[in-house]
Length: 336
Image 1 (cartoon, helix red, strand yellow):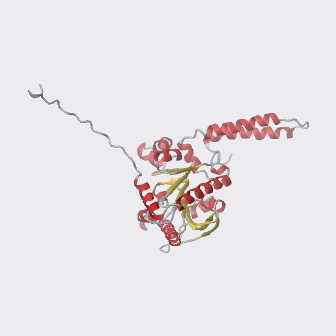
Image 2 (tube, rainbow, N blue to C red):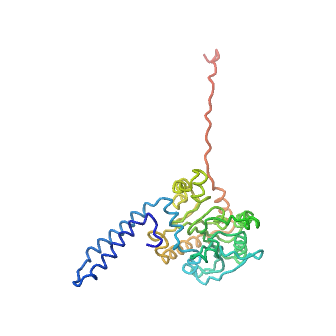
Image 3 (cartoon, rainbow, N blue to C red):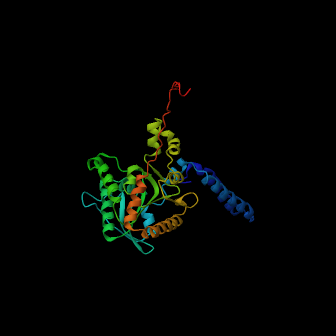
C-alpha cells in the first residue's frame, strides 16, 4: 500500500484480506455469500484501527504530521476558507513561495490568512523549498500582518514547516533578524491573532508566524524547538534515536497542552487528517470560528496584555535547592 506507515501494517493486512474476501465470490461460477465474514472482518478492522491510533507514540505522531498526503495550508484555504485572494512579495527582495498568504473569508468573516506551504511532487517541493521559508517569506508575512492590522482584519496563521531555511542565502539576508522582528511586531498587533500548527511546527521557523492570542494544534501535529532527528544527533550522537528524542522532547499535542504551550487541540479523523481532509477542514473551521468569536469580545488592550503574559510564561523551570548544612552550635551556660 502506498504511503503506508509502519505501525499501520496490521490495518492494511486486514484490509487486503477483506478485499480478497469481497472478490472471492466473483471467482466462482456458483455465487456464494460471504456477507457475515465480510461484516466480521470490517468490525475487526475498525477495532484494530481504534486500538492502534489510541496508543500512538510521539514518534508515530511525527510520522503522521509528515505524511505526504496530509492536507497543507492551500488545501485548507480551499476547504475551510472561501474567496482566498493571494498576495505576493515582501517589497524588499522577492516572493518566497514557501509562505502563502492573502485575504479570505471564514464563514463570512474577512480575515488575513498566512501559512507555510509544502509541495506534493518533486517540482512543487523545490518551488516551495520543502516548506522552509527564507527571510523574504517572514518579511512577506509581516507585511500582510501589518496590512491586516491597518484594516482591522483578524489574522489566522497555519504552521507546517520543519524549520526556517538554514542555507547560506538565508543567512546572508538575515534569517534570524527577520524572525526576531516578526516575534516583536506580532506581539504589538492590535487585531486578534490565531495560530494553528497543522503539521510540523519546527523551531523558529514555526514561531516566526506563531505569536498569537490563541495557539491551536491539530491532534497529530507537533511543535518543537528542534526536530527529533536533530535532538538525537546532538544528545545520543545517533539520528536513529529519534523515537527516544521525540518522547523526551514532549512535542505531541497532548504534552504541549499539559505544558501550557498550546491552548487547544483540534481533533482529527481517525488515523490522521489525510484520511478525511474534508472532515479535518470542517473541524478546523469550527475551532477557528469559536476562538475568533471569543477574542472579538475582548478589547485590544486586554488582548495585548494577555498575549504578552502568555509568551512571558513560556519556559518554566525548577531550581534545585541546595541542601543547607548547619553546624551544631555549642550550648551556652544559660541555654544549658
